[in-house]
Length: 197
Image (cartoon, rainbow, N blue to C red):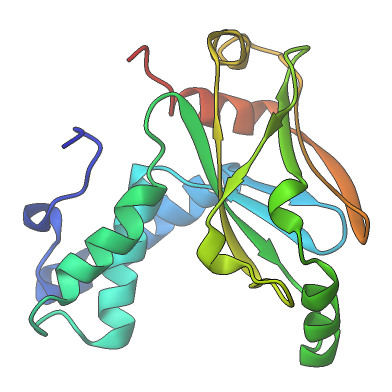
């Protein structure tokens, strides 16, 4: 088990979480703002880390009221621990956002094959294709929420740590093409996810 893995012992009791929630929420919302990258008109990358996932687990338990249901905490840990970057990768939740359900349905049908069309480039290192959770796509439609990860090689890791390195993220699907340059504040955040392991 990695030291990044969230364990059951690290999940606050519901009463304690309610006491701390406002302060936790302010801190995590500020963190999320630094890790959010809009890409084109409809796509948003939310780069995840251990703290964002710990917050998500607590919020899911709170919303579902499932704190005391047997196995509920373990289910959330199983769902969200894999989204914590492992030290030599970046992980993001990619959200496709549309104004109406009709527009969303139309576009999510047209975006089949998206798992081959999401990329990241660090400096002048080669483009890295994302690995996407296959459970979120089908032959006829994709989910509006995609979990993506980019395994990084030594060169990309070294460049990501250099202040001022230009980092790009993008989509090159025939029905949705967009590129975003990641800001310097976000680059620093992402560099903090890396280890030398």
